[in-house]
Image 1 (cartoon, rainbow, N blue to C red):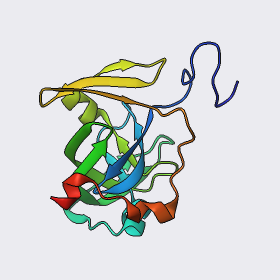
Image 2 (cartoon, rainbow, N blue to C red):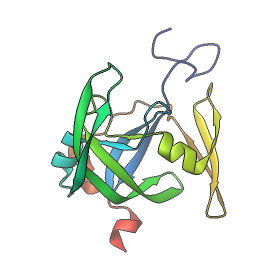
Image 3 (tube, one colour):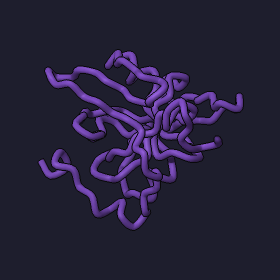
Length: 157
C-alpha cells in the first residue's frame, strides 16, 4: 500500500516527519540522518517573516539529487518546539521542496536518540526530561494562514 498503513505498521515506509514550531511558526519538519546539518526552507523564512542572518562564509549544500545549492543565510538560535521538546537550534537556509525544515545528523548526534524506525518514534533525554517525538497519524498539512496564529511560550518570554 502506498503512503498508508499496512499490516507491518502505520509508518513503516514513511519518512520521519514531525509537526512543531520554529520561533512560534508552525512547521513540517523532516528528520534526516543523511543531512549533515539542520536546514530551513528559504520560502518558509520569507513567508513567515523570520529574520535570517547572512553567513560570513557562504557554503554549498549537496542536495539528494547530487546538485549543489549555495546557502548564504542561516537562522541562528531559533526556538524550536516539538511536542515536549524545546531547544534553540541553528538552521541553514536552502530551498526545500516538501518540508519547512530538516533536522539532520548534527541534531541527531547531539541528542543521540533511540529511534524506532518501524513506528517512526524518536526517544531521547534532554535536560533531565524524557521526550518522545513521532510522526502523527493524521495528514501533515498546515494551513499557511494558521502559521502566524501560533506563538510558543518561548517566544513570549
